[in-house]
Image 1 (tube, rainbow, N blue to C red):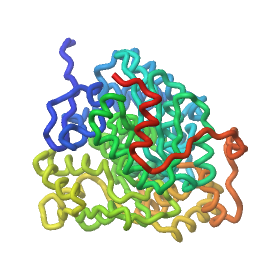
Image 2 (image 1 turned 60 degrees about the horizontal axis):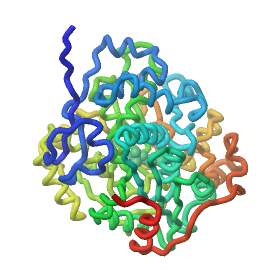
Image 3 (image 1 turned 135 degrees about the horizontal axis):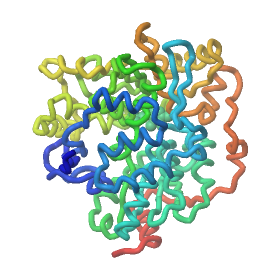
Length: 478
Ligand SMILES: *Cc1c(COP(=O)(O)O)cnc(C)c1O
């Protein structure tokens, strides 16, 4: 036995941050140089370890994986945070992410049984408990400011509700979300949750958040933070279910599987990429986009061409309606062999709204080695898939999961189990479900009368100063 322990340190994809510990990167968004935090190296899982993890329950498996990345929180405290987060009460089953087998070698991994019925809960619920723990230790407070058009906002609010030292100020476009989504957020009565319905569209909300974030004095004064998908702790929490799904779909560790992942900001599939880099036997990570196909275009052609907001389509899988994929920079960092100078050059172009093209470079040849393949789904395809899966297997899926299934099935290899990630429940998208199968989806218990509950929100103009004043009145300046 050696008393020496290798410590995990985090660096920036753009090379401009001295190595930091997990706790030091937890509450910050971007690195000071504009890059994203990455572990210096990926922990490597040995065959012996993988074998010993096969029969662990979700919480123990989560501890084994997360403790490789989070090594500056005492073991028993981390275990406590995990145990408080992944409960039957919050996620509906002992498995937390149950695997549903449609036929031998074809599975759906249920990631959407948390409080807001979407996969973001898996990471966000953990983040809520982790933030509360960290803030209690330092005596600090955190005011989370965000903009949402649906899933992220409600997931953040349900994760932070009632947490000591945390307030949430969530901007959403007045009257633009579905009735279900609106009710889900606005029915929260917790004192630390502020729903601000903005007279404008989603981009107005996002612009306000950006403007406040760029006011460094205000941000420091009022302890403003975010919970967006570039947060590294969210990626770490998502790595767990790739292992869990792998063990559930196989019987021995020499077997390979492929995952199909409905993708937007590249957060979910980034966790799959990390799991594969750690040594999980994943053959393909099948990336599915909707009509907003910026990522599919890259993995087919080598051209990464972020879109403008005007070019971004509103689709029937709205949580994948993105113009650029924030976590994609993490993958390119690995693709370049962790060449931060190269990443910096590429993202100088991206940050100006330009494209980059790797087609004619040696990097393009290397993409294959990472197991990533991709395809695009569209409205007709996803509706047809919802109908077909319902008729053939009597299983109802939501439009995002249907995108993953559409593309995943197109790439299915008969000797490799295919695991499609379910990223939301159909109950959230009644309109598309009705179009596909002729009647509304049933709702999980507790959601029957959601729209009739009393709502708590304030309406505000799309004006940065109005929002700043609202926040300042409710937070203590230092
Ligand atoms: C956020 C979201 C996605 C996209 O996930 P990324 O991590 O952004 O790639 C897919 N489906 C649903 C339902 C989501 O909420």
